[in-house]
Image (cartoon, rainbow over all chains, first blue to last red; front, side, top):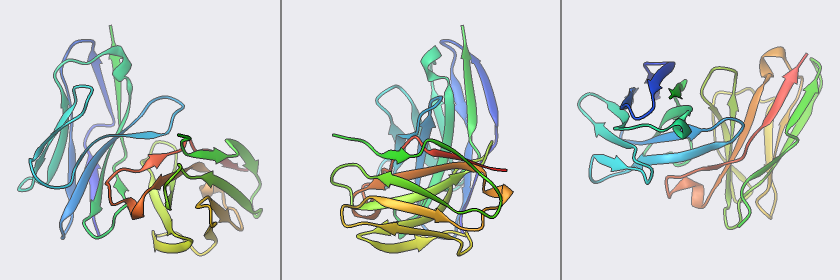
Length: 114
Length: 114
């Protein structure tokens, strides 16, 4: 069975500053990795995913994450945040033969202030 | 294109009662997954339905049951409600058991058990 650890429950950050959200996972088999975002009073939305190929994946709104197999990590970064990035961010993993059955971390609340 | 819709959005039940939550999947999606998100935690996988058959189940007791209809909409039923069942219940749809790597979530049904 796999597990996901998000090391920070809340990350306060000033607008235009960089942010990094940490995610570590454990699994005995190959995995797929995801970051989902949940804006207030909305459902979860996929931010980015790693399935195979390049270990650095990017989203359309400036986030990126790097899959590090040796460190079993999938940290999320953005070089300059906006007020609109205020949300809860969830790291998730699924085993490669278990599509759609995600194990989520506890989430990291990002609060961006002016 | 209509997204994933869930009903009801909020409901209050008492211990021992039964509840049915409903989910309409996004057009073209034949897979529905249900997740439970307790306050302050990440979503936990309950089960997945693919073409009207259960296709995997998380660590939830049998009093959590589901159904998927020919139009791929789905129901989650919980019998003998307990206080710990209070949570946000999320439905997610996807094509082909989630093989694209993306789940499309509804906004959830918030259940309070008194």
